[in-house]
Amino acid sequence: MAGILFIISAPSGSGKSTIVNQLRSLVSGLDFSVSWTTRGPRGSEVDSREYHFTTRERFEEMIRNGEFLEYAEVFGNYYGTARSTLQDAFSRGRDLLLDIDVQGASQVRAKAPEAVSIFLMPPSPEILAYRLRNRSRAEGSIQEEIIRRRLAKARQEIENYQEYGYILVNDILDRAVEEMAAIVAAERIRRNGNPEGNPPDRERLLGIAEACRQANSQNRIQPVLKAFGV
Ligand code: ADP
Ligand code: 5GP
Image (cartoon, rainbow, N blue to C red; front, side):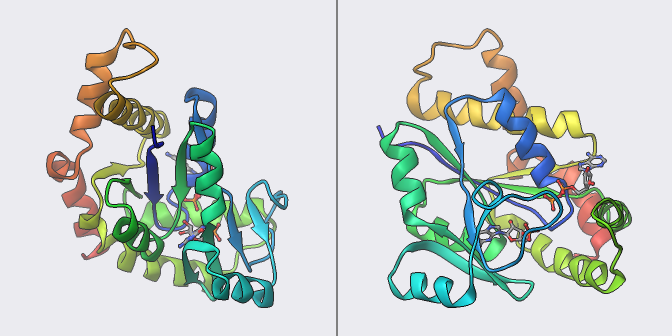
């Protein structure tokens, strides 16, 4: 059986990496796609763990060779998902999570309409700015220009939220992680009838995931949209 393709997109600094890292220890059978990028490693990032770091020339050669399922230019650098990453995960019977931007997500949805897409929102621009500054400080220096650009980009990205099946607001971290795990479990139950057997908290997981569907999360989304002026 083909694996399930999960996509998560979020404005930079929303807490996506933090949530995805926690998800790794909670969910089995799920691979985390390692993208290719032309940006340099940040903080403690290691080649082939967070990203496959490469040159612009090599990336453009991969584009010409049709090696990417999707790619996009984000903040002046290329980022892309290799087709081989999907083939590798699915041939081993695993599901795959792509952490990609809104342009990449739209390319994947066009090629794989059955993909499950999740958009993660920060609670407000003020909290996003605070998180971006904290992260920059932890990595050595705060560059206000970069933070300003990322906030402006966040608003544009949030405008695309309607393209996504599920919406999460990363206010309380534990809750957002629990919601992500519930979405993965619910989609597995829905599509595969849950081959691992019914989890004891099946109804609770289905309920949490259902509440995160875009149509059911308007009460949570509206204040965020208003705060970002969307
Ligand atoms: P992203 O991967 O979306 O760019 P990160 O996961 O690097 O974002 O998170 C940005 C910063 O916000 C980090 O310093 C992280 O520790 C912090 N953070 C993430 N989620 C929360 C949360 N729910 N509450 C408070 N801080 C958070
Ligand atoms: P960062 O530089 O902060 O790691 O990532 C910047 C943005 O690039 C994030 O929105 C992230 O989701 C996106 N991104 C990371 N990998 C890919 C990819 O393979 N394809 C696309 N389209 N976007 C990616």
